[in-house]
Amino acid sequence: MSDGFVTVAQCVEGLPQGRFVWELLFCGFLAWFMLGAINESTPLAFSYVTAEWPMSERHLSLMSAALALGNFLAVLLGGWAADLYGRTAVIRPALLLTASCGMVLQTARTFFQALLARFLLGLVSGALLGVLPPLIAELLPARNRGFYLTVWMSGWPAGALLSVLVGCLSPGLNWRAFHTALLVPAIVVYVCLRAEMLPES
Image (cartoon, rainbow, N blue to C red):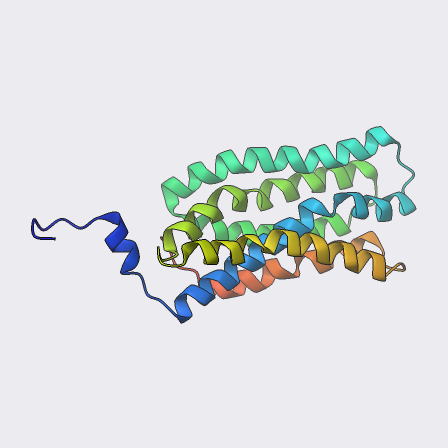
């Protein structure tokens, strides 16, 4: 521009294209895939848990509420922390802690241990809900942004669908192995972040 000022749209258009965009989508898709698998597969996961521990409807509701409460608090705290320290500085530990809490959930031997582990899982994975969307939206170029966002957002239903298929096609699977399978994307995305495939916005 002649007056020396640059608009936000011009800055976004100046972002690198090609490989950068697809690396960004790959990381975003896998993270959203994991969140969809964790959150939408809850009824199926509970069917595995009840095979080990007899639980009432109240207990099942508490298990679901524990994850939701963790997500609610994490969205608030994650957004605040991202403004202070940067979005990738929040995403990296959130991914690592999500995988760690998933491992902790596997070690639960009582209902209350599982309830606490579910809350912690929601608390760390939920941070991605408040931090990842603005990061992806800011880094995607304006041209074809609708298409890119569609690809990224499809990760949630894809994760939910795969978790249901895994459960239905593997009747002998226990709930511990089920949760382990759902958390694999967290490790992959964390490795990609360490390789700087997902930069700060």
